[in-house]
Image (cartoon, rainbow, N blue to C red; front, top):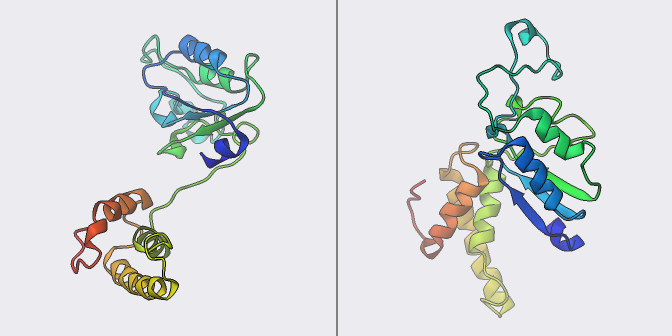
Length: 196
């Protein structure tokens, strides 16, 4: 969200849980023209790809079908697309869409022009684990004003980071999970056995 701060834009987090087309349209109508809008877990909002048996072979997102099993009063794909770039949409908004399952999203929702940039957050590899450890445990100038002492302490921290990295399996934990663990154990930097 540093982008929002840099450009002086407000951030609006719009939950799609339990929302219908008309309510989403009304919410977007209330938003300022220039802002950042975040739609989290759009895959869980009922706008995922649904195909009939004939269209299972197709990889085109245009063959979306909606069965009668979709409950009334829920968000439809067309309702979501209309607020994103339909007649009532506004220029000047930055839209951030998150999903845990991009493969479940209809191609119409994530096509170029509607989604300009896709960023995948992967599980932490050794380099990320090491950097996170150092970020949490390295001493700042404020904490240790003497540069020589700080450098020595931070060299020790980097050695501990190597040890930590060697016992935490790569590509099994998200960076957020590792960071949460490190912050919760910040007072135990010399722990020999990391309970991860």
